[in-house]
View 1 (cartoon, one colour):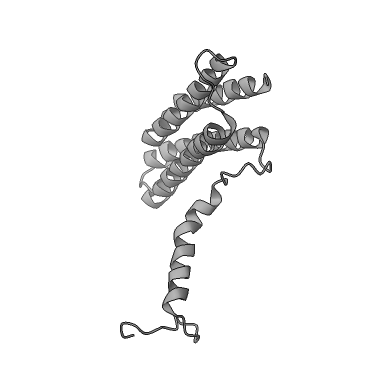
View 2: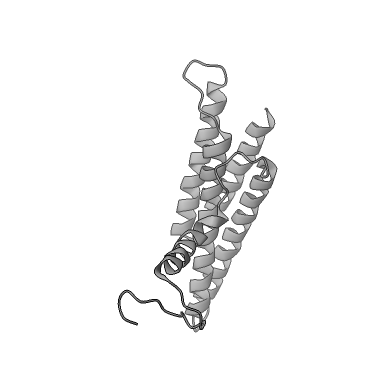
Length: 164
């Protein structure tokens, strides 16, 4: 294809530069489409997000167990080890995304110092920060102590949210 021309992209139909640009844009943003929008739509709720966090923690735990088990085998099936590592990383990222993009950005409203509700606000921020740090740590190792710590923080968050 010469510069300035259109191609068929294997479809038999010609695609102009605008169409190609649109296709590239769709592919570029497709990865972000899985995250919740930042419009207060009312579709998602705290209980559903907490359930997702619990599932992610369970998946991280299972991934850690499989990584340890497969790494001890002889011979080591590196393909499976890598797949479980990637799975663990993905669910740790999802946990962090829920903590940041749903709770911190949409559900935890800042409260000015000295205003009523400030202590509860700081407690929520602290819990969510701990969850993010624990998610990061779970990506760095197979230490299941991080699993119990994450579960504790999710339940602490649930408790704080119930007080509303």
